[in-house]
Length: 244
Image 1: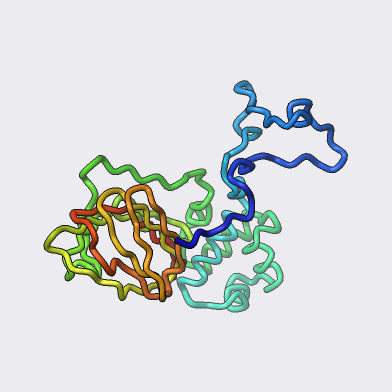
Image 2 (image 1 turned 135 degrees about the vertical axis):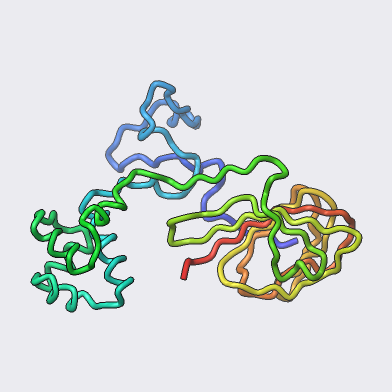
């Protein structure tokens, strides 16, 4: 079975490389990885993942994002908004990109031009992060293209307010299910096999997945369970694609 190689060894994920002139801790000189100091603050602790640390949104960036969003809802250009609010187009661009701090009179003019209360321009400044919690066995059953083939989809969560859509499903196939390997959609997908066994197609290859196996792929290619080797089977499917 072909394996996807990683750019960085897993054992080095989350290890921060020192600056060229920075002192190297003795533990690292001896070939050991230093453990995080439990007394250290949250910002100094390594995440263990290669994803960049989430940065705080400034009030200027939050206001700018809201102005851009409201403008697009009205389907008007930045030049049209500038003319209505009696502000220069260059100023609108800087405000939307969070590059300057706007005066109260400027925000009032923009809110009036956008036909929204001025408080709406601060809506994005809440320091909130999406979180979805689903108790065992309580995921919503949803209809998908594979439902007609007897595939049972249980939605385990959802994302809100992001540029990306994340759909985690627990998929079950039983004796009544039939194979279907003609799925194609935008984004990427991860399959993690929990029970049973399946011959899972992606493009021109078929992978035999058993409990504990993972398949990660570009979902724009044809894919799906082509051979139901051992049923009932369950696997986790996580689909990620850009929000339109």
